[in-house]
Length: 429
Image (cartoon, rainbow, N blue to C red; front, side):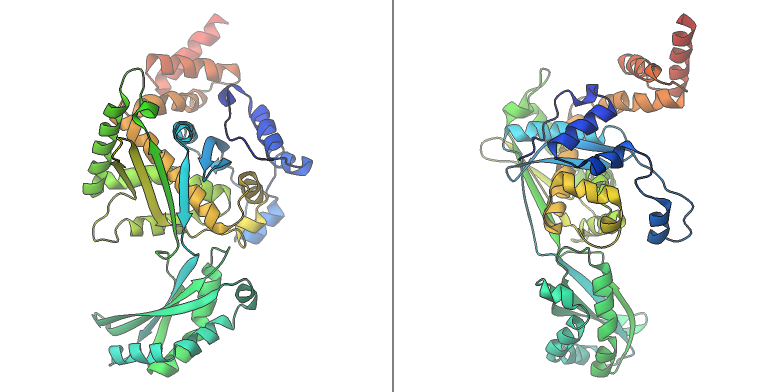
């Protein structure tokens, strides 16, 4: 049964009612439903096997972004994140986008790079050609380490050779193994392959191998998303769609030309992407590293998205960035909630997961640019942040909502004001 990603009146429901709606929509079993309604989804014994020196577990709020339609399919998207307004903004932008068809996505093959550093050679260009001549032997040695990956159609597919003739440490050659890692993130696979070929590389070049490690600049493993919104879709009571498009384009151009703005612009994109990565047990640090390095690939740090206006006057947004994520291995397989998140999204491959994350990043970026181009970023964000401030002030139960609504209505979201409102409420009682 196809999932309907629209979540009408979701904010008015209790957490339990929201989870019941999602669980029913996704046809989850009783055991799966209990994972989010009972404490201890990650048992201490399991956590102890995941990392070192375990003393407990740390929880983050998990929410669901609604309204997403990606390549013609509705997707409910779990996000694990502590910051208010992210899920609300992404869901609202997805609601607008679905009126014009939703998001289109694509991706490259899941190719990762492993780097093998070679030093102690006086003829780096000669070593380069010697390695190319031995390409088939090198590939065979690399692929001897993972028969399962080979059986799935993956494996080491090619090599690249990068020469640094004048480094401060003398001539250096770096060989890249290009590995199709299929549905794995791939770090362990490519690192093992790099180590396995090192003795052969030393024999071929006469040099010494130092580092044998993956690169997190996964520029051969890209995810892409595109969205198109008409002026009619973007129009509000206060502003025309055309005016909003012009404002978005001005805001985007600022990020495209100024690295100081681009850093904040791209952080907002990762506000959408990281929670998907965290919720699915993937390595969000690897995704962050690759994204920011990719944003600098042309010599200046710039926007990860592009926004433009087509011939019909519609706003068109695109994003392309490295997306080294997996469905197998690591926390993605061992963490019960990570497996649950993947089931909710009904993803069939690591590439599809990366495309979904890219679409959420694009939606989040649109939400930020639209807000900046209209009423400013703080109005909506602080209204949602008011609940946090009410909790900090000591509000409990129904007090949280009462205090938060007062703060939002007054446009004065401060802890000291929350304390005053809380004291007034309790005095009246």
